[in-house]
Length: 109
Image 1 (spheres, rainbow, N blue to C red):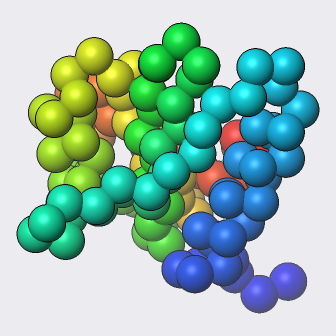
Image 2: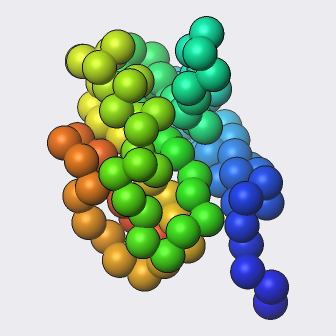
């Protein structure tokens, strides 16, 4: 099987998020976040109670702090958010910034 990366990884994550969302009794919203300066987060999940979780997809074996830039900006703008997750193609789960966890995509999908 060829590696899953870039556009395909984002679409795989979105497909799984939509299936998960549709199975919930109280459906969360799944959105994209972008600033006027084009900083962005791939997905923001908003629970019906207002809880926010930001998700970024990166084709990287070991995401860096640079890969979490959009998440950090989002978390500064929404300090009450639960946190952020970088889904990546590697094997390691680790904290890469305050409130930002990197997790292999295949462990949560």
